[in-house]
Length: 195
Image (tube, rainbow, N blue to C red; front, side, top):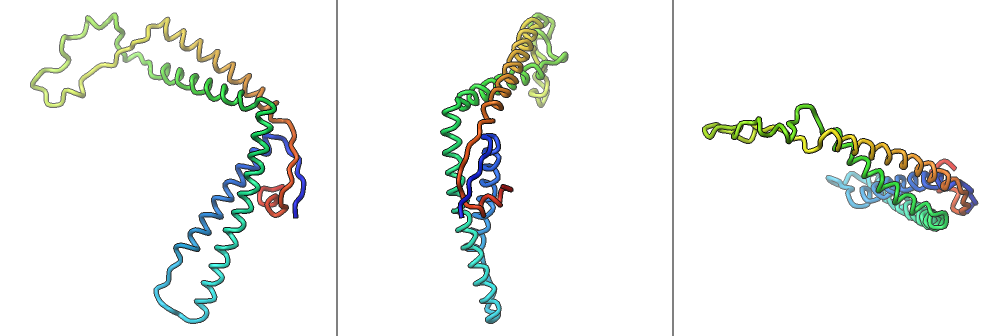
């Protein structure tokens, strides 16, 4: 029996995550039961009865998984339409790009160390750090800092500005995801995700 559920978009996303996990668990169980059941010999009618029960459980899990999958498709379609209508998909794309950029800048800044030799100090290095008779020459090297203090400060400032934009976008996305959406689907599926 179907029932109507009205939730915010962000809550529907959580419902979809839970359904996807449950679908995965059920399909894995069904595949395991229906394809990996083995016996080492015939032990009598009781064994056959237990195997029939296992087979029925595998088939039941398969049917439940398909019901969950149908509901999941319905939720994802509705979320996609709502995301397009509210513009959240565009905001999410920008959020992702800015987050990746900011993370890269932070990685570059974190990679800078006082143990690096600056370009202007390169002339003070010996012409060759390793003599020809050394067995493993790959271990003798120095890290070179290609970013001077001004460039590091610029990258740091850019990273902070990006973080500020990321926070603002996250708040905007959160506001957009407060929109409410009503969907009808089976009550037994709703119970799985705590509705």
